[in-house]
Each structure stands twice: as C-alpha cells, then as structure tokens.
Amino acid sequence: MRRESTGTYEVTVGGGETVRAFVPRPLPPVPEVDFREGLRRPLEAATTALGRLDAVTELLPDAALFVYGYVRKEAVLSSQIEGTQSSLADLMLHEAGGAPGAPVSDVLETSNAVAALNHGVERLRGGFPLANRLMREMHARLLASGRGAAMMPGEFRRSQNWIGGSRPGNAAFVPPPPNHVQECMADLERFINATDDGLPVLVKAGLAHVQFETIHPFLDGNGRLGRLLITLMLCDAGLLREPLLYLSLYFKSHRSTYYQLLNDIRHTGDWEAWLRFFLEGVREVAEGAFATARIASKTIREDRLRIGRQGRRAGSALRVHQSLVERPVGGIAHLARRTGLSAPTVAAVLRLLEELDIVREVTGRQRGKIFTYERYLAVLREGTEDPRG
Image (cartoon, rainbow, N blue to C red; front, side, top):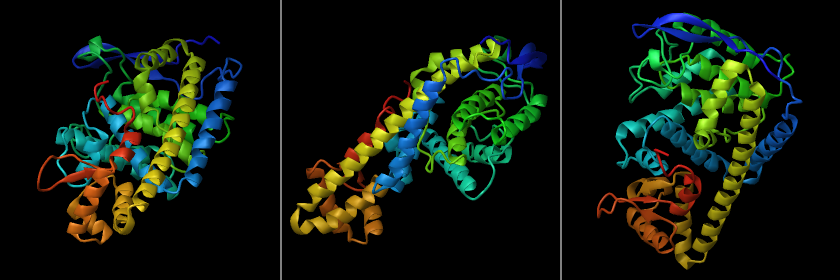
C-alpha cells in the first residue's frame, strides 16, 4: 500500500539557519495498517516467540537472577549504540565497588540506564500509567550523571535538535520544532493507551517506537528511551511479566536497514515494510533470549553439580557460588558479607572455583582481588564484546 508522507514540514530556524523540520501526524496511520501486506505470519511468529520467552520465567529456577543479568546486558548494548565503551563486566565491577576498565563516565551512563528501566517497570507494576510523566521520570534517571546531565534531564526539549550532521542545515533528519513537542507527545500518549483501535500490542509497540524516534522529544537519550518504550509497552499489556525483550542488538546489527526504514516511513508512509522488519526482530530476539535463558540455567545447574562433588568443601563453595549467581562480580570481603563466611574461607573457596574454571580473577593484584563468575557472564556477554561495533 502506498501512502504519502506521514507528516508535514515546517520551516524553522535552528542553530542560526533556516531548516525544514518534520512534524509527524498522530497515530494510528491513515489509511490503516494493511495486514494483507505480508504481516500476518510475522505477527504470529513474533507473538509465539514472545509467549515462549514469557513462559521461560516460570521454568527457570533462578528467573529473578537471570532478569537481573539480562537487564544489565541490555543497558550495556543500548549505551554502546550511543557511543559508550562500558562492557557488562565493567558495569558489574562498578556495582561491586571495583574499578572498571572503561571510563567511569561511560559506566555511570550504563548504570543510569539500568536505573531508568527498573524505575519504569516498578512504576508500571505499581499501577502507574505508561504516560509522558513516566517517560520524563525515566529520562531524569537516564541522564542523572555523565555526559547528559546538562541536557535537561526529565524535561522535554525547548530548543531544536537534529539527527546526523554537524548542524541542522546538514542533518540527516530534523525533528519537530520545540513548540510542537508537547502536542506530539500528548498524541503519542493517547495512542499508546487507546484500547479501541483494534491493533495488536506488538504492532502498536512498533508504531509507537517510530513515532517517539521521529518526535525526538528530549535533547539527549532519545534512542535509549525509544528502545525501552517497546519493552515497557509489552510489560504494561501483560505480554511479558519480566522485561526480557530488547531490540538494541537487533537494531545495532541491522543499523542501516533500521534507519532507512524510518526514513522511508516519513517520506512514503510505508509502515508495513517497517513492521515486517520490526516483527522479525521481535521473533529473532525473543528466540535468542529464550535460548540464552535455557543455556544460563543449564550452566548454573552444571556448576552446582561439579561443586557438589567436592566433598566437605562443597557446602561453603555452593554458598559462594549462589552469591555469584546473584551478583556475578565480587571481591573477597564483598562475598564474605553476602555469604556470612569468613574471608579466609571465601578465599579458599575462590581458589577452588578458579581450579574448576568457574570463576576468574580479573585485577591481577595481590590485594583487593575481584572475581567474576566467568562461565555465567560468558552466556550473558554474547553480542556485547565490541563497544564500537
């Protein structure tokens, strides 16, 4: 189905020069999304994969612990897309009180992304609506420190921004002028919360993501919040009980296609091509997360069995292992506090776990050693190794 542009251009002044800024029309699309255009099968496949992923939280013996690690994996990936160099180990090392290898500012930005997501999920579980107020609250946490702290955390922008290029005049895309942001976001909020449009939640999430990215309502952090919006909508609608679906790696791996489809929507209104891409991403990522959850659970079970065969040392070793499942990076003093064991006992256990290739010491120091649950982190780490990829 062919449509015209999904918005209008307004001539405005940005950065001291005259530019054409794009103002999107409210959702849903007109004419409506055509499910005959190759969307039904991708929607069914994505919905099935999402259902399997949701069910895995009932099957895992350590579901909450897996969620803890997976949320942090997403924060790392989403932050890497925005240019940070923090790894998953850096983030967890920071949380354990160690000194990460990446710049501290990068690690703080990633830590802020975890805080923003957790805040959003907790608010939804408490009955708070998925509204602009919640998005601003999450934005305030996302930009609480680091490079974005001076970019109006928690407030919609009051100046013109742009995407790509060194100034609005040579930008790849110029979002709506600031005087349109409030109205555009109010329209988006109404669309997200509408219950009478007949659209499947997955389709609504795909449409809302594009609209948010097009409005670009904040001076910084739009990409990270726009990706989180997808997960929040699925959790809010009850399709996911835990925030386990993240498209950052998919968008990162198909970056050129992603940006091309967003651009095509604005010019030709080809929502169907975008939705096919989006639904394929949901299917692929949901299946990958399901497989990761199964592998992580298998890894933990196997290591417990190996530790259980260590005779009288097994009891203390299993306590340290469980603590590392909960928080995969830690030092001797940290683990002693968490397990209630003495520091010498923890040190002896860690030597045993090193011999079993379960943990790895990462500082190379004689004092203040930090250990990682390497086998478990290796499962979570997939896709996050190259910060600049």
